[in-house]
Image (cartoon, rainbow, N blue to C red):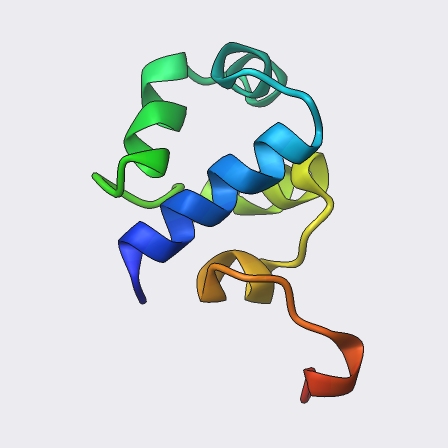
Length: 77
């Protein structure tokens, strides 16, 4: 897993939703510093929060862990 790629992807998806770090943190009941750490590649979201994060950003867990959108034609079960 590429922490820089994942962090950049989280930031991109957050901005696509017109959310600030504070907005996303509030929706997930975490601190804005935690979101900042993800986006600066200083850590990954905890497993317990990944599903909620993905729902807020309208992405899949696979996309989150790959750090990019996955086209349905490229997705393999």
